[in-house]
Length: 525
Image (cartoon, rainbow, N blue to C red; front, top):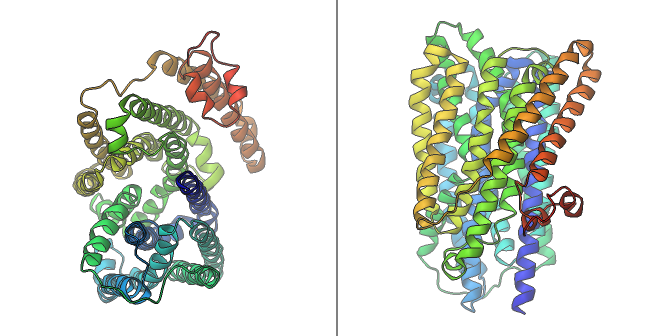
């Protein structure tokens, strides 16, 4: 029975991970056509309200559902039933008060927030974005109840449907806004699309409730600890998913005012902010790829397992960090080299290429940060990792205020790099202490440096023929994909051939038999 439960938990975790990956890919992918449809000014308007929408989505998908799931699991483990009157209703009321307060404050202070952003015309878009918080309690309670009962399918399906409706709605709104000439309708429309997607997700979850009995009508004692769990666990867990989102939020409030201080007009600053935001979908995709593959190698890291199985846990942690670094390094270097091609291919022109090349360094640092943070959370350091992210936000604010007036978009990129580096260094220090001086961080530097150098040579060699495809977007796409594949295979092939990975690490990858053939003969497990 225990084995079956453990198996179902692992399958559920994998299901949620896959749904999360699909959602993040969709979330990153739609921004390219959005920028193409609306231009940099329209993209700027959307990106100004996106952090507000993003916070609501994270609370409704990760933070609060995890807290509700924790309460549900605790009730079940104690042999108690999940009572509708004594648990579901009180938790829903707590979340309604929290999210309702956020809505009231955000809606009433929209004018002030818009002025802080340096653009008073964003006020109505900000008001519409805060409306999404009203749906969060419904999503959180239903998802949390299902997850607490080890039923991950409802959350996964609702998440994908929610994201799909949101993406389609945003693109339709963008097209209509451009047709009518009211670009600021993009912010309002994006908020409406997000709310619509969330409401339909609630309906999907309610349909699952009709088929599955996830609560009882039996009345039990209500605990005051519900409030503490929802506030502390829910908010702290959410913070750990908000690293990149928090950087975008800081830029939403400080980048335009900083650019105006540097000498740009309001219109120029708005467009420049839209140009800078071109980097966000590429950072998101690169980070998701590196961190997801790495985290799959961490088999339920916990403090107990580290004490009882130190060798196995140390090996898992080393492998996760190694994979995260190697994949993120390849993605970062590749995007930096190809960005002069990617910028006009995806975003029509070459504006901001230098700053965006610098910004790609965030992929390497954020991938390592997310991997180490996930390890630390498994070792019961949720508060510590959340505090580091809060510290990173403060660093980003200060660095933006100092560097943007001096270096404009290059300053904003440098501020993001410094902020993420601060969080990563903090994670590394705590992880080193947790491992008690063990040799937990080891990197095959010679194979990695040789492989990345070879990849760079391949990509730079192909850049010589790039002028043949100028001004032909379809051919440029084929060229870019071809260079990416050839460069990536060169990098991976040399890493395997030079012994960067052990046989056991390779066996955990898809198509493992193919990769094992490239390992050096006599390679130890």
